[in-house]
Length: 277
Image (cartoon, rainbow, N blue to C red; front, side, top):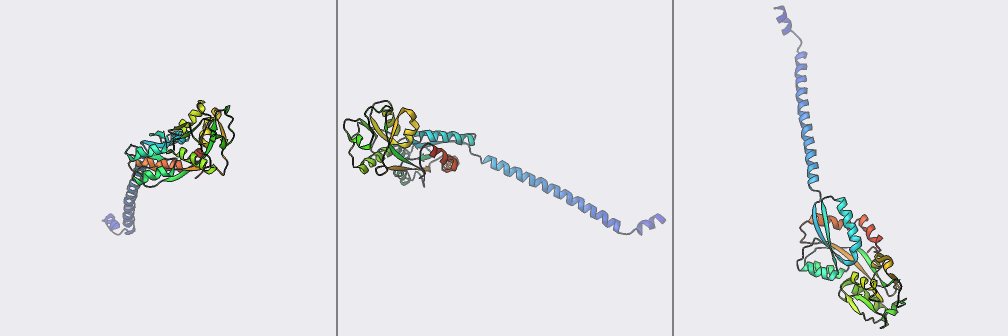
């Protein structure tokens, strides 16, 4: 009886403390559960971010004069994004633009002429484009310069065999602008499909001279010799790039365009002799 009375008369604080401890324990379990949920959400977010990583392949239609610099950029891009593949189709911008508007499968277009890009945009094959480079023209001759060409007016001498890009190709349009500026009439022995073909004719000794881009003379190295065109007669063209509307991998196409426009892309382009637009 004494023990029973003692228990009944025990101060209530001990029972309150026990209840409080139980509540705290329960809260602790709840917090632990919340922590697990948060960790799971974080892991889910990471997985989601990983699932949005770039993958797959794209085809880039690009002006022939971009061959060297774009191939290098493509390798850099693939290294930065494992699991991706960039395939290039190089050629005259006018021809590439026609292929695109006729439905040729491609994801990105890099043109050597705003005019050809406008053709693609007008056909709704692209929405917008951004200029990323500019190129100047230069006279190109074989290393030994057998015709002894030293100036622009020498190209007007009918005794000299001169090759140019075709009149509808950007490098042909720009070369003829040079002659117009200099008030010269130059009759080529052949009109080539693109700037690489024009350069090859000179390299092989099949022509005494040609007019190509500064970047192509630089890329050819010791295989040719370049002769600058006076500033008052010179002409240039700008290079726009755009993601194409029919791209089947829009995320990758957009990422490649942004890579070309990035400081890394600009550095590679200018190192090849292009100027900033």
